[in-house]
Image 1: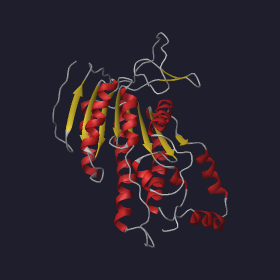
Image 2: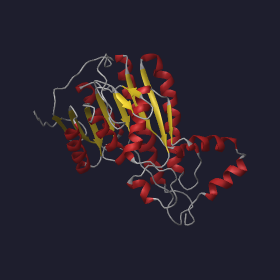
Image 3: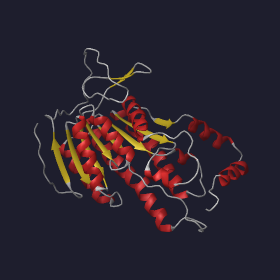
Length: 315
């Protein structure tokens, strides 16, 4: 087993670990006839196919995958899922220790290679420059922006802190949108690619205690839809994911009921399937899609009353 490590210029540390020979091409991976293999639902195969044992459904995998936010629980689950297919990974995150651990797990799981970049999306210019460096190193077939911040109004405050509003606006909307635009332009020139933006079901509702979070995710949702329309004639798909509750450290910090909560691994499986289909919008679990329509249908006075009722008592 070959292993190499190198540092390159760019945002933070950039390390490559090579486990297997890297297969690389400038076109989408062809689908070819192959003997039927039985994989579990959790495995996405890079060169063969993955089977959904529940629905007998198959999805093909990409060759080179960028996951931004891999030091988080959802991003880490996505990285490990694609590593199991033998993908060549490029993982970004703010937490160097967690990224190192995820990189090691991905190599053990079978990733062809792992590139690690420490990056804070609040420095948007540096993030865009890093996209150029990493995509020039090896063009991405799939990019998933799973980074984000979540917070609510502080106890005793009438509105959220202005600094918090600015921070969530940058990390949840401005930076992902700028990164997606850069990636979209590059993929369009190549004539293929897939972009996945992780939003939130909170974007469907004007949450008075989490205006910055809901508003920033709503902005990302509208941008994703516009970018999808813009790129669909260039061979590039854009998928917006609007999950409900996912059992992450950020979610566990917020008190209150979290109905239909998903594990990061389960959410990652659903995201991978939606990405391979080029599905425009994934809302999961499905009841959150129903809540979206209810929010739209209710008279404003009744909707406002219900949303206020959701506010935690101490907020």
